[in-house]
Image (cartoon, rainbow, N blue to C red):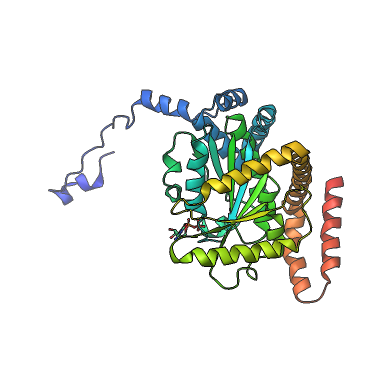
Length: 366
Ligand code: GDP
């Protein structure tokens, strides 16, 4: 139909008919791009990982971290097939409060270890990442030298879900990395509490980075965290800070004496170092090597890994049950109301919980 504005009344204002536009994208390229985005099969993932292909490893980790059920089912199959090829690594947990010097230290520790050969994966568990959208390891440049090293793989913390969920994904990522030939694994976490327990439950050696000079070294640190440490290292022992660092080390040594002897039979050590100036780093890794040799000899190495597997079985069950409960439609529809009743003191917490659980189990039976 002729456009109304082409009417004589609108003289001078001509509107042309539209013309057919050519395709905006070369159809050949379009097809190619599609092909690239195709998800690999389980067998392709496993083969790529076993060949040490880091691109495929990254894609597999992305599936591990995904909340989509179809991704999870592929991820779980890939993990299962990689499991027989995993385990051949030394896993070190590295914890410390923000500012303790974790990134600086991991960069130096990593290079020190890579000098001996092998491959290093740096993973993280950051419970705050959901809040701050990946504060820890979010920025790869935090580890300037490692991030460009051909034998390192740095992966930020998975960000979605509960601490338990985030930790499980990191643990599964360890399996994939090991199958890809990474024989040194660092798992970093911020020293703020529960995340240490999660890291402790997936590593062979737990290293706690501390700082001197705050005057309340021991007060600020939770007893439970200290008890988990296989080694405590006081960072920034450089310049005018050396004496203070040594004093802090003495305090930590004295405090450690008060704890019961760990099951490993190993006496945790306290060392001072400077990550920034690369002083005392060799001594830290000599200590870790000595520990690994010691616990492999006395059987604790395998015992701890078995205990960890057991722990993760229960964690997986707990996580699954929790998800199933909170995603249940009936539970979802009742939750806000029950919460309000508890807040208004019309219902005790226990009765409210019971009601919700009863409704959940009744729903399951249907
Ligand atoms: P993170 O938050 O634990 O990862 O800590 P960073 O590695 O980012 O370090 C925090 C600050 O401490 C940075 O300004 C570093 O330059 C500084 N720093 C780290 N290690 C040392 C060290 O061994 N000596 C000194 N003097 N400063 C350090």
